Amino acid sequence: MFIKLILLLPPGDDLYYYLNHADDQHYTLHWVLVIVLGTRQVSCGGLLSYFRNLLGSREMRILILGLDGAGKTTILYRLQVGEVVTTIPTIGFNVEQVTYKNLKFQVWDLGGQTSIRPYWRCYYSNTDAIIYVVDSADRDRIGISKDELLYMLREDELQGAILVVLANKQDIEGSLSVAEVHQALGLDALKNRTFQIFKTSATKGEGLDSAMDWLSNALQNRK
Image 1: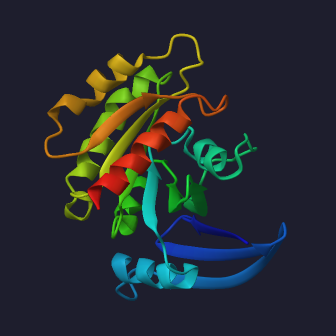
Image 2: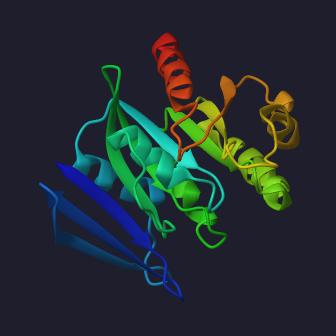
């Protein structure tokens, strides 16, 4: 079974949530919910609780975050199907069930566009770990990536979440090294946070196993 949940943010204050349920590669529109902000109060936590019940029980909840174009969706489907798939910019989010070495994860890939980042906080509740993806070749926006990371980590709902930073696109010539990404993000300033940084190339599949091994061990040791 494959479940894909997409949030579209059209101009204005309307939020359209489309839930697509597909079985054996046949995609059919299953359910639609339209919420108009300003006409009613919507609780982010309550909405996500509804989605969580709809999707069933979970083992570990992981968010994949980062700026647009960092490689988040490519990483998600590398983890799920083990190969590169054709992706388009995520306007909202994708959610997949991923099994890694007998551990089950519910992985949420959230869009990284400027207009979508304020909605990240709607998905923080009950998060066990964050995979923060950085485009190591995007030197111009590394400062923005740092600001978004540090702002996010100040949220109360994420205080216990384990952090994995992926310095992605290491296969591109001129990319920042892992040490440079570490310094640029100010990771040394993180206190009371279990975290690690890894160099990765999502398109080549390099570094992801090491990152997931570390994350799996960190989650198991935390119990």
